[in-house]
Image 1 (cartoon, helix red, strand yellow):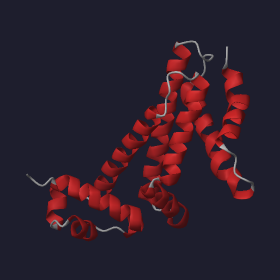
Image 2 (cartoon, one colour):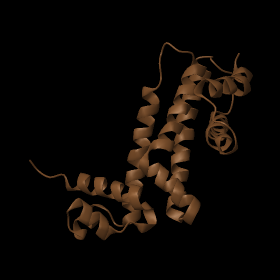
Image 3 (cartoon, rainbow, N blue to C red):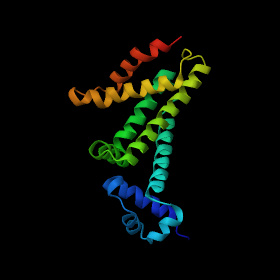
Image 4 (tube, rainbow, N blue to C red):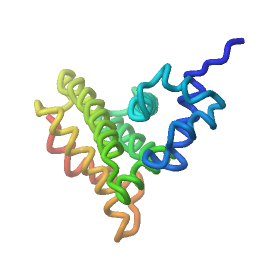
Length: 190
């Protein structure tokens, strides 16, 4: 059985970025964890940034798959939207690499990390926007700007889950869903 060196490199780099952050991860470190020569890494990736971008791309794909898996066809659009947003934010809060990247962004303001976290946010907004377009087409919600609405929904969820908890008792999933319904969905419903 042939060894998939590229997978070894990606797994090793993901582990290193998750433990030490982007800035502290070196190609030597990745090579050592993957048990490959540093030159092997460069046969697949021009530099650390390219390797990082691929890992972030795979993480975005994993997050989108988890969000899709949260959808229950027997529930209403608003219930499913809540489930999707909640799942995305749980992913952000629990995924070891995401946690480390948010920490590095706050503490060090590493440009590559800031750029990749913006890519993650853009992917989340694009995913929600796609679901909103479907809802508009099916007549579940009024015509609106899906991208702007997705942005507002994401920011509201982040505020309710992350920002609110800094100074208040955390809201449970049902309370967040009720607030979301009150402030956003009822305003969009036909």
